[in-house]
Length: 515
Image 1 (spheres, helix red, strand yellow):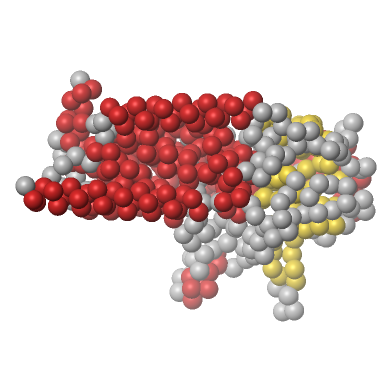
Image 2: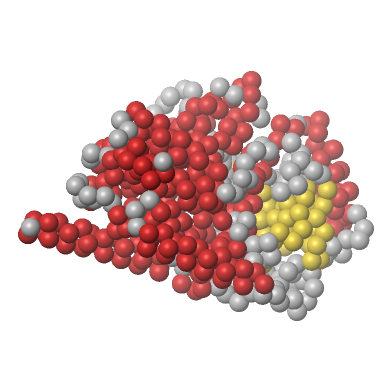
């Protein structure tokens, strides 16, 4: 039966092809946390290659890729509805619209490479090994574009399907797009109809698994100076977080968790941890600093810079408080969430004069100047990440040099308790592997965790729990290959595969014509 499966897929009509692509994409979503089944991805990819082979032209190829993308992003990013359910009586009706629009929009980045591949593949022959590699290359290029176009959103890359396996350690060599390319290539080659290709995939999988296991067995060097860290997780539900009647309760919870003995060298609160802006409640800042003393306090907090006309620029920030509660260092989030923290093209949208939309263009946060290290006495210098800044692998380079550790403050209450928080922390673990640095993660409702430079969770507190994570900061590794060379080898590899496969196709076409 399995032997005849490619033929059965190839003879499917347009409607069945779209349904099959949609279902195959949904199966691929099983690779993402919290399920984390990478072999679901590998076994689904051959079906998409067979559907592409059966497509009569680029238009049908686009629909195959787009349909798979709708299934994948619809199932894998279902958490996108959660922010609209915080106040369901007001925004609940938008939830299904947001899910459909998100899935259909991101699926365009899957439809395009399928259309390109179908346009370049021979019409009268199977795709074979060369076709599988061509599709893997252009698909990876499109995923790279998804991570960079406009503000970029590289969520749910295929690399993260390996987060619970040793293969994930290859991120230290080539980063997430390289592992995404390898995943696409491996799965597609399984459908290429070549036993040699299947053998090569098996060898490479064993090699990646073995190298990753060897790397995980290497000890993390101890820090020259020990540093105890406390991650505070207040578990303030998003629907209650900003209610005036809950304000004192959540502040008191933060203070009690922070002051519990024995105190840590540094205490970290989550994103927008308190319901006031920096400098607007100096007495509460002093009380918070005193609760952490003699250690230091890092917290997520909003702040404002007043303008001469009475307006103000607002920032989503991270601050380190001194013993008197005054900030000794500030970092402003630079990678803002579109439509969540600002409205893209706000001036243009406001100029349209649509009464129901124009008020939404006012306010929002102002982006900070970019990544930079926080270097204060008594703490190893760290690179701050606020919320989803941790999903961008290329945003962890600061002009001051390499950090000693990474600090992520986030409010994952927006994601609910389904797949979103698990996918978010998986990407934080990926950043630790890529950088060879430990990452301390303080999340309002969870998952707060200390992550070592191999991406392993050393200590954590689960979703929906209130408490602290008390742990020691792990040591750092030497700069990884990915830190040194970045994505440049990937770009060369993708271009090389693209050029080589085109050469193979053209040579094959020439030889057939000579006959």
